[in-house]
Length: 121
Image (cartoon, rainbow, N blue to C red; front, side):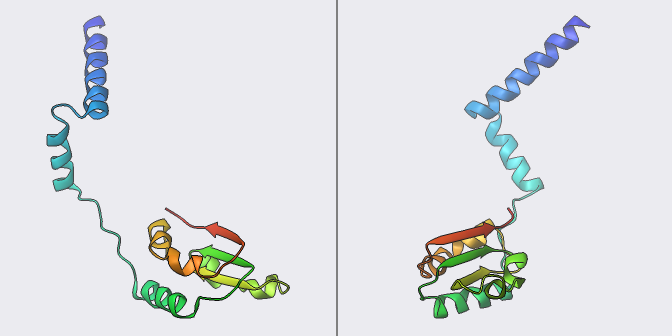
């Protein structure tokens, strides 16, 4: 029993050291992992590119607030909810954090002094 516990702790410690300091066999494990389950490259829908293009072409205004997000933000009627504010809706259905980062210029171009963000990973 003691030998099994010691072997388990030694194995765990070696695993931590392997990952933390990237020692042998870190690269071999990484290449096997990439072969078995490659990380998906981000794919954007036609809707994403359509909305991104629209925001880039029609986005340079002086807004009070910009709403940034996914379909929940995209589908909301922010102007009806806050009629006293000039609002830029920069929501795109199905968008994720990497998509928002890809279109920051169209968000900055709104010149809004406040931003509200609701987005998934």
